[in-house]
Image 1 (tube, rainbow, N blue to C red):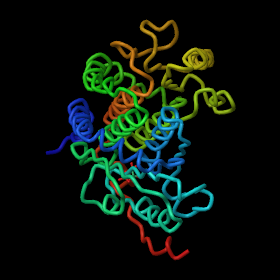
Image 2: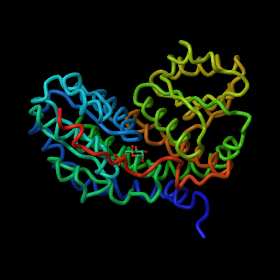
Image 3: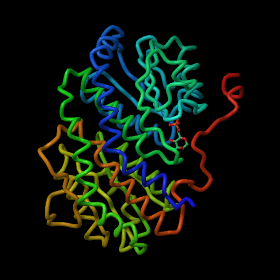
Image 4: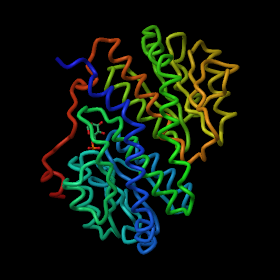
Length: 355
Ligand code: F1P
């Protein structure tokens, strides 16, 4: 008899081992990938995906532009599919990077068709499924096959594809990717030290208005945390850029609010001030990668020697996956099968491509 969340918990817990496998496979291809990128010499990069993989694209675009200096954007696959003129600037100079766990989501697959119709330079695919339509349609694929899941909600597939993005971006930018190799052990330590606190926080049903704040590389992570909370636990939650939260949304903050701040390296002081302001409004705050023994709110510090900021985004997410998982279980739900959702959204593509 399957227990609620049996698959999801196993998949979340397996991330350290799966990350090691994915990183090892990348290492073997790194030089060839860099050479292929240099031969392309794109003028800009466009990252696309749907749902979780759109949010992954947001992280990817910020990392890519921040590290390589090449202009990069992230949009939902459906935007490229339906509004190509508004989505493409110089398609003949654009590298399209499509991100899809399944490699079969209709909007993403057909967005490639649209991109090719507009003379796009090249299509690189990041996926967990080698034998998928998207991989067949791409020019090059980076695969996180050990990360594929049985559960609908993406957990290890998302973080493993993000690990590939971080490694590829750093390699293209000529950075030493060695810091990524410490991520599996760092995550194992975080699971050991923080899992109990997150499970207890998840059961605080008095905190029923959830906000995830993140900026820069971490905005996409905040969005993915919001989506996990919705998909797994049917809890209303929202994500904002850190300082944007003051510009209206904080009107919703009171005793019932849980505000989770994903603290960055570059804007930490300003971000901490937002959390302190929310405490003054009555919120319960949790800072990830926060100070040890926080002088405000609650904090989960990331132990170990400092990581470069481009290597750390992936480390925030498993903790937020656990928060969503435990809230789901506490509500008597089964996160393995989220309400209304399927693992893949498949649509009749003829309607899109008639135009
Ligand atoms: C995209 C996606 C997921 C979402 C749900 C339905 O799938 O929208 O992001 O969480 O599972 O499918 P994919 O293109 O990454 O396979």
